[in-house]
Length: 405
Image (cartoon, rainbow, N blue to C red):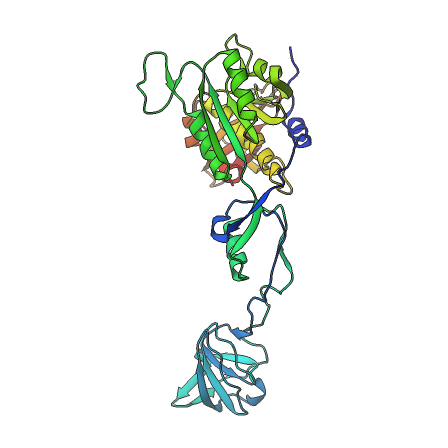
């Protein structure tokens, strides 16, 4: 009987086999969400480029405000996008949020603290130099590194890049990933479902997960449970993709041919994990191309992809600080008998107990074949090996928002 590998050990082993892609491309900034920076992003400008007003009011020289109720002449009106004239002594400028402050001013009095009468304004309160201003470069200084190479771009990063005038970003090229689903029982959605057949959901969930990572998905079709056909398909796909992901066929049944086919044209570095669901997970190389063999049950496929395959693909793109996703402790609102040697990932929702505290509610059927448990759940509760759970025990909760982010 083969030894099961703990997930932490499996994760470390996988990271040792990474071969990062070197190629990059220039992509319009708006299309860069989720892409990985290939070079540091350095600001070419100050943001804001000029000192400007933080609110609607009057630009003044604070030295002119000797006491409350000082009266100043309003010499001009400045809106955002326009440059005003220099202020002379005893003058103020009507100014609006975002407008550059004119030379000769050093503060803005908010309009609520002023009384305007024709072209004269009464400043009702004293003001200090620098009040209600946004200084040049207050947000971003020209020449600083905004984001480092290896950073996976978030929506807020796109706004930051645009604020410095970046129209294109240099990012790592997309990965090409082949998805191979195996099983004589599978048919494509839209086909007639004859007795003994089931629809192929695994390809669609994996393709969706991969597209969320901006991968180019290569569909190999449904592979028959046949050793020679599987071997040939693996060899062919290895020539044109960065990674092959298969589902099913990595267990020990007589019709499970993927493991043997991989070993015929490459090797496995990892097989069988000490996790539930997801035990028959495999990883290795097919003629030098990365291979992942995921279990065929839909829950096992989904969870092993999120826990292990996704971080690996991000590492191939040079993502920094890739690690196993971690959650936070939440009390269990259920009981379970002592777990076995495998670490369990229970699909759970958050609810509140009678005292109003957050707690974990499991889906009733935790079978790895029940895909609806993934739709029900907000995340996974982690039960360590050889652990019984009592109501109130703290378990690590990993939200799907974290795993899918």
